[in-house]
Image (cartoon, rainbow, N blue to C red):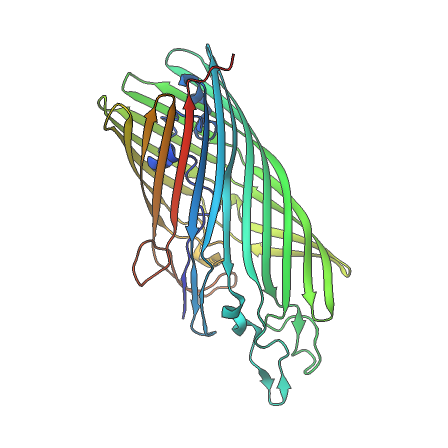
Length: 432
């Protein structure tokens, strides 16, 4: 039996579900509202109804996964990791035209494990009577991180008093680091003589550091149905980030330097949102988001080494997902806004390819926060908690079978993940 308790960094898949604490505090139900500079990401049409501002925020995601494999004798706790993501947005409006700029992290995933917890993967001390395993008890580094930084430029136009359109162009720069043990040497093909090959036991340290760039675009519309109701629609195009860089295989006889190429596919995203101002104090938002994760069906890594080129295929076969998001804001005083939100986030990874490198679960997210304005400065703060569902998975060719469990704040059952974001905005700026 295999038991996994792991939290997926930055939401299911590798998308950051919450850009900016104002939108995050509303459960990400922000496509219809989009009334701060993060509209560059959420819906660029929302820029047309805003005063000029500069918006800086920082998000911290705490992650501590665990993994248990009773058959292999593994009971591991991942390193406690805090992932900081800064975001900068600016916007300016002149008559019917608006412009925006963003520098932010929309995608990320990562985990780190202690090598001492995975020594069982190197195999037993003796493979047969009198045949020692030279790799038994050897510790390897286990680490994975993927981050994408986007530089975005937006333009919006107010077609009528009720209808606005906007467009965003993105330059996306991705980074990926991997450290793991690999099976590169066979001790069983010729008993007693290590040869290149596989025997099902970990024997070689692998390290990889790659980066690359790609482009994408987005557009949005916003329509005021009446004084109380605003609707929005936002689209992000797919993007391919061409990663390349160096890698190393650390054999006992010496290191072998490699060159690695891999295309990272960022899926298409489209969202519909509504914002209803029930009273002067109460606002209620509802969004439906769709992510075409089915494009993430595999990862092909091309490895160039002295002996030739090797293509390594990782099966993913992820599935398209809908997210349903709800948020509410209450204006407690003239300066203080209180926010709460919820969204449902289904798992894109099927049972057949589920693993701890790209953890995936059905999540329920709760968020709460506030915004406080003093003069031309606004401070926003949000905290989010993810509650995951257990997945009982049978072993298959491309997965890690057993029970997979992602939860938050469950005493004596799991490690937790917490998302905290704070933002400061300077409003009503005069650029000229």
